[in-house]
Image (cartoon, helix red, strand yellow):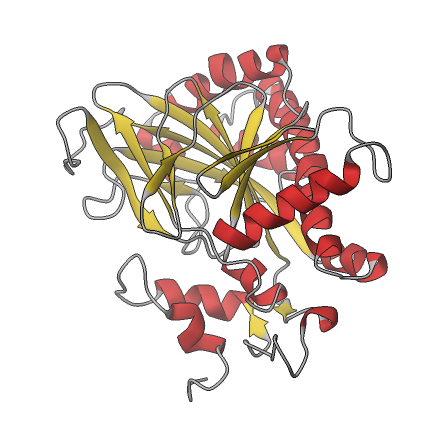
Amino acid sequence: MDAGKVAELRRVDLRGLRPGGPGWVQACAAVAASMEELGCVVVAHGALDGELRRDLFGRAMPELFALPLPAKQGTLSGHIGGYIGPDPEKAPGLESLRISEATDAGKVHAFADLVWPDDGNAAFCQTIGAFAKGMLELDHAVQKMVLESLGVRKERVDSHLASLVYDVRLSRYGALAPVTAGDDDEATTYMVAHRDCSMVTTITQHEVEGLQVRGRDGAWITVAPEPGTFAVVAGEMFTVVTNGRVPACVHRVRTPSNRERLSVLFGSSLKHGAVVGALEELVDHGRHPLRFRPCDFDEYVKFRFGQQRPGLNSALQEFCGIGTGTK
C-alpha cells in the first residue's frame, strides 16, 4: 500500500487490495484521513486499462464533441444536466455533456440515440458502459472505506449506496477561446474554484494537467494526470451524510495555455425525490452534534442554482444548516 502524501492530499494505491486482506486497514485509514482533511484523495486503481482509456479519450470523446452544436445542446436538462457550454465568468472554454444514470445500459443507449439518431453509435455505448462499470466499483470502494473508517455499520453503508444514482460527464477545456487569465502567462483558469453539489465525484484526467485542489492553508495543490490514478472528490451531499466530518472539496481547473484538456467525471448523487441526512453513527451530543437538517437534493439544486450566487458560498449552510434560521 502506497500512502505517499503531498501536502494534505494523499495518494493511496488500492490495486490488488481486498477487504480484510494485507494492507487494507492502512489503506482505509489513509483514504479517510485525506478525505477528512480536504474532501479529496488520489487513488491508484485498475478501473481503466490502457485499451479502454484509448477507446474513451481517443475515439468516444472526439466523436461526441465533433457533433454539431444543436445535437449536443439537445441533451440539456435542468440546472446540472445534459450539455454545458462556456460560461465567461465561471467556466470559459469549457464544453461538457452528462449522461444520466450511466450504469444503466438503457440510459446510455437513449443518450446515444438522441445525439446519433441515425445509428446510435454502439461502440460509444460499449465504451461508456465499460467505463461506468469500473468507476462504480471504485466509487463504492472509496465511500465504504471512508464511512466504515468513521464508524458507520456495514449495513447502513450498503443502504446509503443503494440510494444513489451515477452519471458520467465528459468534458473538454480549451477547445473554445478562454477569457480568464491566470496568475501568470503560462496557465489559464478554465473552471473557477467551486464545490460540487453531488455526493462523490471521481475525476479521470487525460495527459494534460489542470485539476487543482485547495489545501487547508489556502494553497493550491496540482493533481497530476498520471495514468491509472483518479481524484475522488467529496461533494456537498457527502458533507451532509458525514455530518460535516468530510468537507466538500474546493477545486478548480487551470490548464497550460493553448492545450486542449480532456477529463471524465463519474459522479454519484441522490435518486430523484430522495432526502438525505447525517448517518446515525456520526452524530453525538459531544464532539459531533447534528450539523445539518435532512436535505431534499432536488430542492437544494434548485436553491443553489436558481439564483445568482458566487462560486464559493454558504448555500448548503443556508439551506439546511443547523442554527441558520432558514428553511
